[in-house]
Length: 157
Image 1 (tube, rainbow, N blue to C red):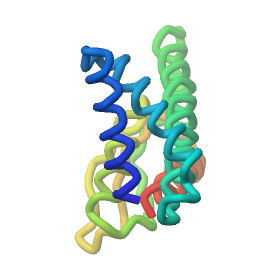
Image 2: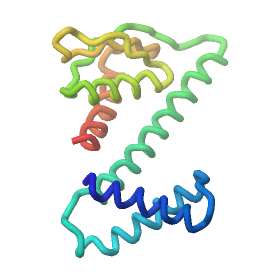
Image 3: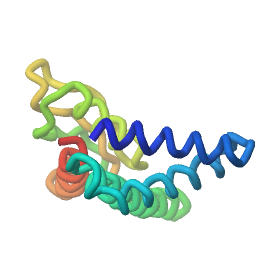
Image 4: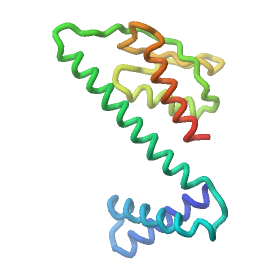
């Protein structure tokens, strides 16, 4: 996979150099054109799961943006309402992430989502402690977090 990402970035740089500007727009366009070129010539190159991972990363980004939007709206509506519906609590979330990178990314994504904050990880690195402001039932937020963790681990592994 690393060969493909290097080739894709190289093609993006060539595209931007040909246009004479290394602006983010030109780099993105070059990356997309390079991706298309690599995709069309994939039979001539060694096999890789690069294309699947790129589509998976796009799907993950769209999923996370949607979850971020929903959580933001929920918090905004609750803050503006005369009677807030918050039920804060700290929840023990048993994680399937093993590596430091997986745990770090999961905790960052949970913290970025309005209404949740990663607090700590257990010493055996199997339990993530998360503060949730909408947790009348402790299992409700865990279901959403499991979905996020599942998609993140599919992308990383």
